[in-house]
Length: 279
Image (cartoon, rainbow, N blue to C red; front, side, top):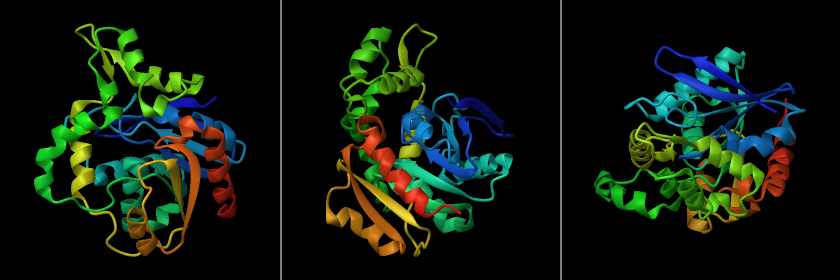
C-alpha cells in the first residue's frame, strides 16, 4: 500500500502517494479532475522495482486549491520541488491526458529532469486560437467526465452519476476507491468533486492556449493509444511522430482511462517499456 505524504511549499501544500520499495524514480501524473489513486494498480505492480510518487496535482484531491495560478510553469515547479525533496535529479514520467501535454512542455524546457516519458492518450497538443475560449462553457457540458463534479443532493446521487462515466465502466473496487477519494460533502450539505471550478477553468484555458511542441524532443517516449481513446486517427498522432524523435506507439484495450478500465494490459505495456530504459 502506498503512503500518503505532503510537500509544503511556500505557495501550496502538495499531497502525494508514495510507493517506496524500489530504487528507480518514477513520477506518475493524473489527468483533469482525477487524483493520485488512479495509479494504484500500476503502482502496486511496479513497486518492487521503482520508487513511485503520484501527486494530487494542485487543484485536485488532497492538494491545495488556489483560486489562481494553474499555469504549466507552476505545475512544473511543483513537480521539480517534489523531486528535489526526494533527492531525485531525474525520473521516468507517466502522464495522462492534460498532464501528457504538461510532460511534453516539461521535456522541452528541462529535458534533463526526464529519463523517459509515457504519454497516455494526451490531449490538445497544439495551441488553440484564443477566440475558442468562448466555447469553453459548452465544452464543460459536453465532456462527460466533468459531469461528476456535481453538485449532488446526496452521496448516492453522486455515485449513480459516477457509475455512468467512462472512467468507471465496470465499477471495480479500484474504480470505487478512486471515486470515493474524489468526492466530498460541501459546507451546504451537497456533495461534489474535490476538483474545483477555478482549477477546471484555468487549467482548461492553459491547456487549450499554450503550444505543446515548438522544438524536437529526444527523450525516449511511449505513446499509449487506447483502442477507444481520444487519439484514433493518424492526423492526431502525426505531431507526436514529427516532434518526438525517440517515439514508440503502442495500442492497449480500454478507453481514455485504460489504467482503470483495463489495468492488467496497461500495466504490462508500461512495465515493458520502462524496463528497456532503466538506468
